[in-house]
Image (cartoon, rainbow, N blue to C red):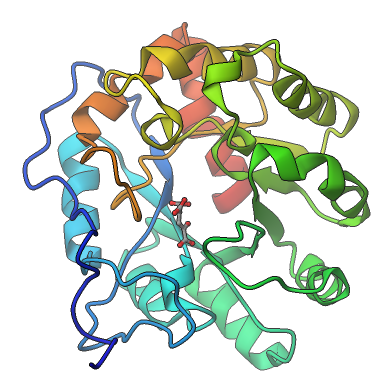
Amino acid sequence: MNKNQGMDADYLPFHPNPTRPNFLPPQGAVDAHCHVFGPANKFPYAKERKYTPCDASREKLFELRDYLGFERNVIVQASCHGRNNDALLNALKSSGNMARGVAVVSPDISDEELTAMDEAGVRAVRFNFVKRLVDATPREVFLGIAERIARLGWHIVVYFEAPDLEDLVPFLRQLPTTIVVDHMGRPDVANGVDHADFQRFISLLEDNDNIWTKVSCPERLTIAGPPYDDVIEFGKTLVARFPDRVLWGTDWPHPNMKSHVPDEGVLVDVIPRIALTEELQQKLLVDNPMKLYWG
Ligand code: 0GY
């Protein structure tokens, strides 16, 4: 079978017609975590991928952005495209400067390629530690990449799960740039915000003012399901404690969801429940992402 075609049998495609949210994002709002997938006939998925998603084109992404009342996107390279960032770069170049990118690169990438990525709108690299998504990369390799991208003024996005944080802290402290943690460090919400794992994450941000976090992905963290009541306290705590270091994103098209198909209208309506004032919403959706990606 040609694995470059055809999504996995258990893969849930994105919502065909999300509801319109009640919450109206402030002008200039940025969806700071989303992806583009394929289309596979133009941008084939990577040989080393752990899943084959449903195609999710840049056109669909930009349509959703407008529908939800957002102005800009930060598109994050996902593991199904490996280290080939062509679909991402293509989306950035067609966005009219309204999208920035987070790439995944190999250590042997040339300076010319990095410069071309920078010109297309890439502003960060992603280091993925989630074992079900990628084979492990040695830390020295990541440190080598970190040094090179730091010279371009880029930052580093890290994706890991809560139990892995303790082991990762010394490595994170070695990174020379701003660091953005995906999805609140993926806490187990059954444990509550007072659990040692989430408190360790809060301490990490308290002790290191170069570390930011995305308060995204209630759909992945929830046990209760939509409207994600069991995740609210986690996001609310982080927005209140670190208002200048939080980002928010839809995570469209939600790769690898198994429990349900997220409705992005419902996800946007989580925002005013975690960022309680207009001032906090402005920082979360506009000021913080603009500083990091368009500054
Ligand atoms: C996400 C989450 C996931 C996948 C990826 O790189 C990826 O394949 O990011 C996931 O399965 O948790 O960041 O949207």
